[in-house]
Length: 606
Image: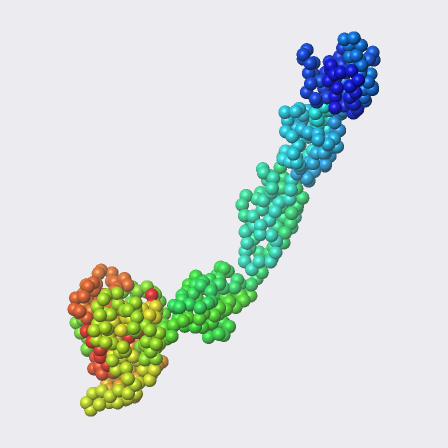
């Protein structure tokens, strides 16, 4: 505390430890700026202290007022008996210190500056100039990003003499380069990115095990590593000490990369086309679907191509390449929630219509001409007619009575309701047809019959698929690089299908699906593409539709636009069809919307 000038007699004030700079000096007094903010009418700043006859300190000096023992008035004059001393060393701020304290090739990238005087403010420069109170304040570690440099620092504190200047010279060492990815063992070639945290540094590298110098290659992009090697790198920059050498060992294993599947195994409600890839260039991939580990004699797939998965199975793949060890086996289990078998028909062109060969030439009809090219995208189609057991699942699930699965036109549901349909015709197990009647019992493995187009279409929607187009049906029935006359070949065989002349299931009856497999199957493994039941197709029927084929052929045709004859396409022979004429793959006709004992259907998926 201080005692203001003009205070009354006998007022005692203790100024012990009051310290400040002397602002002005008289013959028997001085003013001390003690931070009180006092000033008199003459503009003197601070506390006026009368020296009682002692010699006042010099202006600008620092003093400590030890105390005032008494105050008394003599006439108009106020006298103070004081004890005060000049203290040159008392108010000087401590000199800052550096950590690290200068040197050559300093690895640290920052310097901690400390001052022992509590509350002091430190300011610094890195350009060699002595710091002033306008230079940056030390608020944390001071970064060193220039080399060489001279760091200087000075500290200030209110009421104290500023510190001496601390100065230190630094030359810096570059940080080591970093590698990404780091060294290690890899099954494939890698590209290594080498970088240095200091901007402007030039990195040199070697791959022969020697330490890099400035005569070695410069890093200008990722370094390809396609064989086992030791990669070394070192950073250089003018004015800086070079970094240490960073080294990493890369081992490129001599094993073919394990194939990958997309999508991977899982449960699916529709068939899947699984893309199989191998990252090792030039590798040959073999796969199985029977649970066995693949060998080089198993089916092959080119990397990036697709393997069709139309039913639940375990897909396994393994890759080989000359000079390398085979890959590990990739295995994935696929659960396909489809209650019947389907076959995949790959994309491509085929010739559609009458081939003009053998029985096609003998029995051909005008609506089968002209033969024309058709391109079809890949698709799936049922291997057999939908069976009674499969159709019963649809009925038990409520699909038959749910309008959501019937045609978007009101006509389909209206027909069902108008006819009080609760099941297809001829649904009963025991059947007797014809005259004289042929009697037989239908099992769950017999094809469902008596369904009209609407009933077949409703099942397909419930199953997540659709009826096949006429072109899809014909390609699946006959194409193996040339159009077969019959699904099994170009020669008629009455024992290869359920037809009127067949001895296995003669007369008025259907046969369990695939009763003639596999010898009589189509090139894609479909059964009963001739005989047993004919198939509904999605297209409207038009007798001269083939004559409308555009130049170059059709691409994924859907049949004629509109409803030219109020009939849908029917393909394939049936149990009562004329043989061999109506058993040919090219045979086609249109069906009205009425139940018969000769029509069934199969499901397709795009």
